[in-house]
Image 1 (cartoon, rainbow, N blue to C red):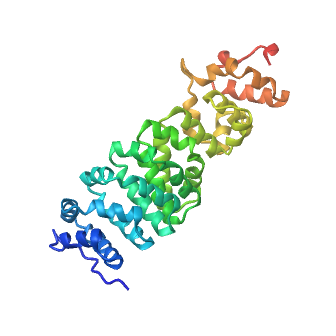
Image 2 (cartoon, helix red, strand yellow):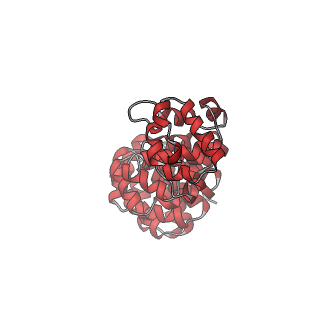
Image 3 (cartoon, rainbow, N blue to C red):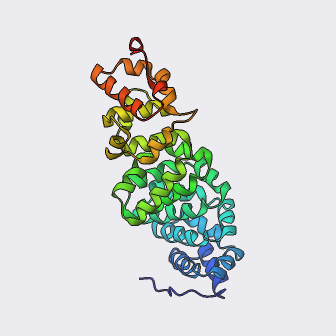
Length: 315
């Protein structure tokens, strides 16, 4: 059984020898040294000292090529070291991101958790957000949010939150199927999971298409959108009203739909309501007369009535 102190030391004199053991020690020594460096990395000065002593490359090597225990402890050591901004760059330059992604995808439960937490911190540096995505990090993080343990879900959600700061990653996360499990986590997760997933969705919603996917998922109509090939904001609005069967704005909100979605429809010059008559004429044509009339009345009662009316022949 390993024995080590969990206390934090200031610029501990053992760091050089521990780095040497991680690099060139026996299999057992490598584990013990990685555990010790993890413990020492709780201290801000030690984070710097470990990096200056060359401790990051051998830890990366353990994550890549070590035994299961070596990978587990090296990953958690890198996680704590990555709390330092300069170390985020050093870890990436040492090639640390691809093996961490591999652990998230194929590791044991503890390895996945530690690697996801490390990637979350590494994603605090803008360039690393791109590197993580290019290394294939988004799909396995999405898988953890969907199917992982409680801690895996928590760390994977905040990792996606950090990665979503990049515009291309917003799209990649949606394409990897990240929105449904994040919405599910907001609904059913624990407090930390809900917080992380909620902020991830908030950042993802800055992309217009993602915003509609998020709203559709919240309303439980994402399959309806897919079945009809509808992905635009206009189509989402129509599908939303159709599903809710709402006659008034109050009914829409009381049906459980998000108020901010209703507000996003707007009533101004660029209102989606003003676009509905032209953009979804063919969709209207496929609705039963009763539903069609009900939907049209709902839109009329929401405002700008002269813009949402359509001649009978067009229906």
